Image (cartoon, rainbow, N blue to C red; front, top):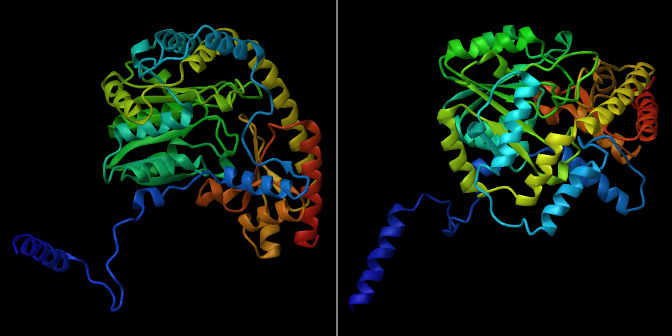
Length: 425
């Protein structure tokens, strides 16, 4: 009797507190995904890549202009450094923030490039810049905090803020401003709940490069608001037209409210290595490293050795690759200028063209997602729809010119033909 009564009471308690259900629906275990996971906006470029690869398995030839990945192989000296590390048995854990030698090399490179002294203790090594962004946001964003971010822009910003309970506030990047994130636009959106302002220069997907006044002005606004500036500088060496990269760390002498995110993927052609880093104010270093310890414990040891080699002896390879990106950019500008019904702001950095296709989609009564789908499925050219980069990206498509000259020319010429047919020119 005694066990029976316990079972009976427990069963009554469960029935009493259970939420209401429709008639005929049985109670089910709570085996549902967390809402915060379902609200993540993944990178559409990888979805498009997957669709394109699927078509290739069916025998279709696809020209890939969708993915932001250098077509170059990682320079040989970097690969060889990692191979040597493996052969030497460098296969063990490192400290969570990374090898001391790599952190010092990052601090030294920052000082040489930006003229700002950074203590290695403020440097934390990550698995790519994506983890750096995630850890930075995890360290500063609380429920209800507002975070300004560029739109169109990298989707991880908006999703990351929302994941941690913050409120993403889009800063519209305007074509008439060459898609720069201006202090004027930022100032209109800052409030007493603003926790951070995210900037990205050179910018994905537009190729915009912020001026010195842009960066300095945004830093001053952030300081007045008591907010952080999170600066994603993963394309900072891929810059053209004699322009110079400016970092908010240059206008924050005591490193009080600046967080710099960077990585090795883009300019060292190390996408598959998954190596990045974040520079934080002293008061954020320990919290951020606790987040990193929770996620991954530490980056791969031999990969970090490759990163040391890249920082110390990779500049000449970066210069050669950027020269080729610059030549490819001119081909993109030339081919787009010949197209009917489209135009494009001249990219000043990174390796993307953000093409205005509003006339095409208006004539065809479709959106940019549908246009990208048609280009892939009917014409065999994979591009990224602008809305994948945020609501203000609608009406555009992004192409990557981190590809061969032949593929770029052929892809753009096929797109020109497709636009004529789709829009009825």
